[in-house]
Length: 214
Image 1 (spheres, rainbow, N blue to C red):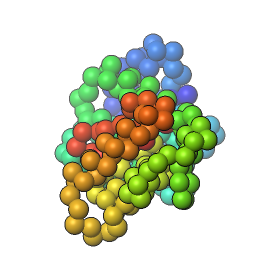
Image 2: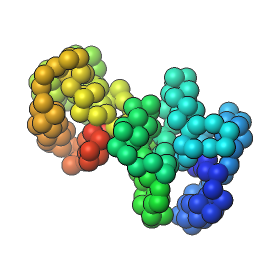
Image 3: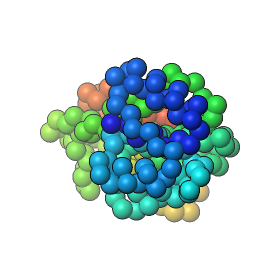
């Protein structure tokens, strides 16, 4: 079930129809309080949340969900498209962000991607504190590559910014440049591909960062 929290009737009707046409069950709510009650009764597979609501903030609810340990994939909708708003939403735990106005086909594709991400982690990938394995075979990773993979794996499919990855692999306050992360991600992605996880085991979100496919 897809939970849709959107107070604009026209947008809600269009989105719900598009998702239902794809064979997905949709439960729509216009009020945050109603969505909270529905979620408590049956957590959705994916949630599509508007940020600005009549009775609260989608961002505040997202923060509360993540603090409670809920890892349900969340796509945020917002009329604000500034990069800082996107980064804030992702840092609070959103899995994806779509600015209004948006194309319905793009939204459906993003929801489909989140449904796939909510499935079990890439088959055979085990990430530990000292090393990582694919199908029982140990990956030959440098210390930085392992730290990056650990951070991405712990994020459970959510996008991490380059700054977050720098902090994870080089330590807070590191003077390394963003392109250092890009270079290490490139080699890590190649090693995961060689191990049989495909070309998109680590996904790039332009201007936002990276996420481990789930």
